[in-house]
Length: 199
Image 1 (cartoon, rainbow, N blue to C red):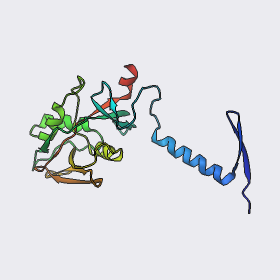
Image 2 (image 1 turned 180 degrees about the vertical axis):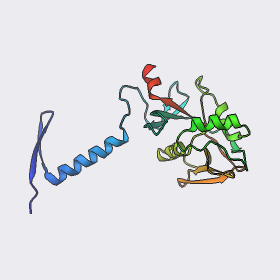
Image 3 (image 1 turned 90 degrees about the vertical axis):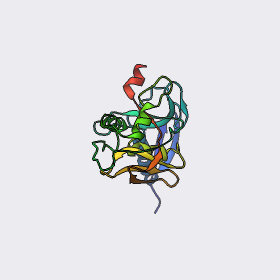
Image 4 (image 1 turned 90 degrees about the horizontal axis):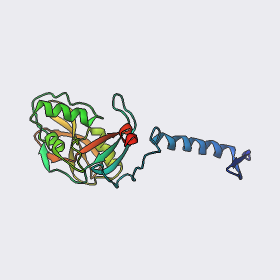
């Protein structure tokens, strides 16, 4: 059975598309739009993975609002700040957000005795002093975009009194390690959309 053809016009162009193909194209277009939903188009943003002048590092991509975390861009430092223990072994931390590295890092700094978070917070670049230890989902975004390609890194997301979540970039595996383990630390900062629009 032959598919019914539909005539379309867009910007002066005329073409025919089979009805099933039209539905498929509409679905693909809608799904593609979801990945950039709410991303502002009036901000000069470098491609993901490229340095963002004046922002302290590499564009780690747009992150839509998640719960209490507003929409923002991630800026990853262009290098690690060494290998450090997570710290606080045998102690429950309130740094349990999987999405908010800033909130986690604030908690870890206030609790004290968390070398990985302290190293990330001490990082400075382009006059920015608001770097954090990335949350688990932020590290995953770095892997998705190929910003880090090897090594094991700490997140700021605690799993238990003995372990915290980590990311193995060689194979893209998220897991957890004992808090006394020394893993790499890559600082990140979250830049709210409204601060970029005002700038």
